[in-house]
Image (spheres, rainbow, N blue to C red):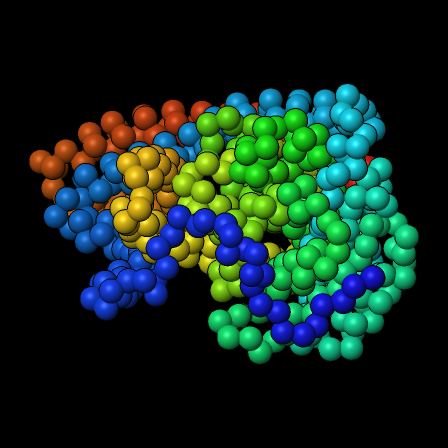
Length: 502
């Protein structure tokens, strides 16, 4: 057993990885000033998107009320329809693929692979946690220990928080005793609470735990190019065969491609499904189906979510996790995308992971806990700031002395594909968030137009023409919602045995 405690620095060997990013220290004095101004502009982009768009619509409603009303009505209707038809098409096929994957025996997944190749691959699962119930963490570790690879090929990093004090040390000790001999090794890390630019949270805990893991790996005799790092929430219950499927995918890929992959299983917040209030249940259902549909869409811009795996080489290539960016999963996906110039791909593994929705003792308390979690997830929109802040440094590296035409071509290819990253960020954090606001503004605008505009403005004709299209789209969306609900029932039945209080 190993323990991480003292000061840890970035591993020197990581300097061998050529990150296509111009260090800010190499900028000229005037360029630093320009870049500083650019970073300020980038930090304002999320606020402009979230607050600026509604204000622009309200401002335009006075001189152009009909146009604003038509735009808002069509915008909300089209989004509901497109989102509904998307889930109906892709989540259905994904449910079938998941059923087929779950029916395969984990031992059969590795059939055809040389045993010596399988044994060369080592998994390390980092489990960041803070004041978690020991039984919840034990449930997550138990699901990992069920893998046939656990005793020989899977190590655990318990990412504890030093600010928790003695309870964290006691919980780590208890978990190590309970799972002694069931894993390749168990490593402890205790994340200090007083590091600079290191806000408390999963991202900072994970960044520290990874450095502890790197020190442990370099002190041992591990085959680093064949190490896979998995990030797990403290309540993540892995599906049977997850690690076997990741191992198979890793070994059957060409060597260059395997280090440009992030493996992602569907993540369903269903462990306490029967204790969730109705408003939370609806959100849970659509979150599950949306994530499942994206995993099955071959053209989707996928980003890692909650629990995922990637090769150690890829983690080191991009410099590990960044402590100061709260949404560590999406941020890591965007970071890998940018620093590999768009070559990193998220690969689906259809062995579902289950975890809990935040829960409190009362109905209202649980709704509030879910609201607090949603607000924390919404902070992930700050990754749009990160995206734009990196572009000048990537471009300067591509055009710097010693770079060639291919570097510039790769940058522009990445920037073009990166539009899909921006679209995903806007869809999730702006459009969905403002949908209710736009509906309210549209309804108020309708009342004001009826009350204050004369008949020669043809208000009635405007309403009749826009209502037909909007009604058809909303009705189609309702039909898609029914279809998605039926598919969710099928998904629910697939994982029913793993749900509490069933």
